Length: 170
Image 1 (cartoon, rainbow, N blue to C red):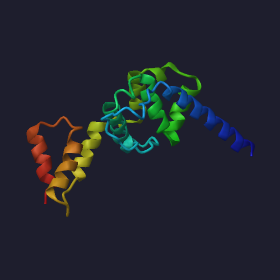
Image 2: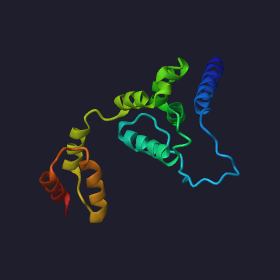
Image 3: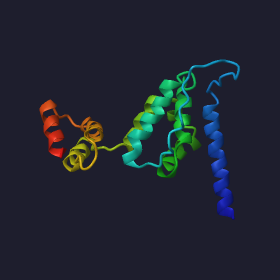
Image 4: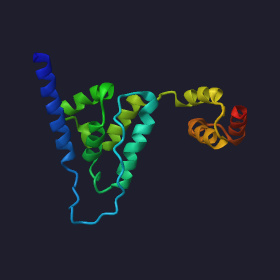
């Protein structure tokens, strides 16, 4: 019971800190017409390297679509913090508890977040994926889309890209 009470208390404190960070977000008046697209919230991020870029790109898309909402760096970092769980939440907790300056500076936050959770060997990982990538039974367009996503992390010239693309075709 004591452990649950302590966890509940810590959770409440973290939620208050996140709310405090998000409090700088201007809220649109219900009477004001805005043309901002409504995006679904990104999936929660738990620290998996394989999901990092998808999560970060989704978050950045929110910043782009709603620049007025995320005008302050603290709104950006607070938004990201509210979507973390597991090891990623464990990583950010000390920054929140100590009201660290990183929570007020998106560029520093993004740099630290990326160095912690992104693939440090992105190019090598891409080459490994390309060596295993095959069209299989799927359409060429589906194969090509996955190929483009993977090959963008390499420094291959056009000739090398054509070679790798053809090697995976049926």
